[in-house]
Image (cartoon, rainbow, N blue to C red):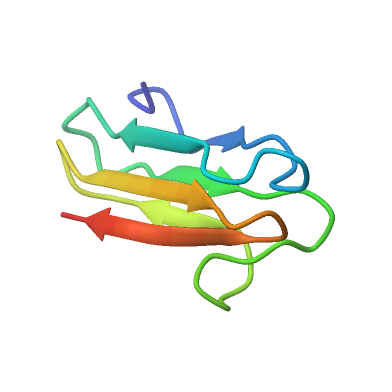
Length: 75
């Protein structure tokens, strides 16, 4: 919940958890960002971390490919 200010959640390393899926959702209505960070320079579909969710109920699903994070959906 980013109602009091922007927050960052950090995913675990994608290494060694191939196929693992995480679904993340911004649940508040504030203008503050919920930033999703990766570790060790890992990327989201080739884009650098963090990935920002800024709209109420915005949802991001990512899956480990064993080295980085693949975005399955973002809405």
